Image (tube, rainbow, N blue to C red; front, side, top):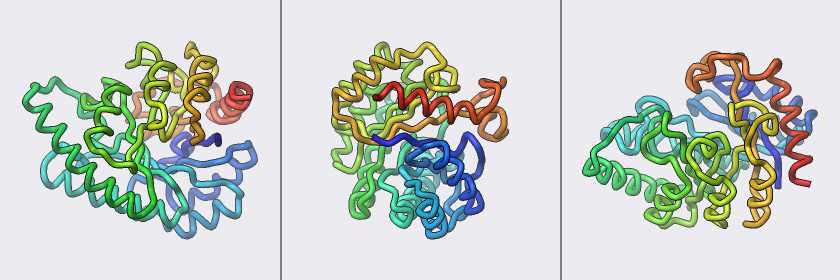
Length: 281
């Protein structure tokens, strides 16, 4: 099991110049870095890979940023844009030596409204159709897609582990797995550990976040039971800290971070990593 850090804690957008962060992440003790790629044109993947190799840190995951105009349940134009964007990320993941494309790879974030059952069926069918095509593309490239349920305030499409597993079953591709996040699970799941056990071998990626988006361990989440559940299902993937602060204004606004969660954002990474190491011993 490897421990990683999402670069959104320190910068947005991540560009080729952001590779200067890698040395710091490695010095703190992280095994991997998770890179949200807001636009494929922002990075030269070969240069980013070379910098990561030099720093001795792996690029464990590429995070899809499903912004406006990228929506597998939206208009034909939005579906086409989402497909082109996600395929470009998969291509970059290959160059980056990165095994996974993760995140809400199904719909634009923030689309959350009451949808009539008939329309829900239409949108579900669109996402399944598009993910079948995208998963086939990913499989050929040797990349795994890990879909992430988000909380009800960020999407009305996929909120729970059960819904995520239903989507994976409907798509029916070995290249599609589940991505769980303790922040979203804290809102949507009745029992986080039980959901992890239900996901089992289909769990492909895991975010460790405080209940308030702050430091893992400095919150009310039942971490011992979560660690026990991850071990019980034989999870060997990355455990990534994905927390946000007011320091990165665009992400703070997108994630509704209106106050300083921790005194220093470095503490989220450094103290959070120490907590994870203690917890998983």
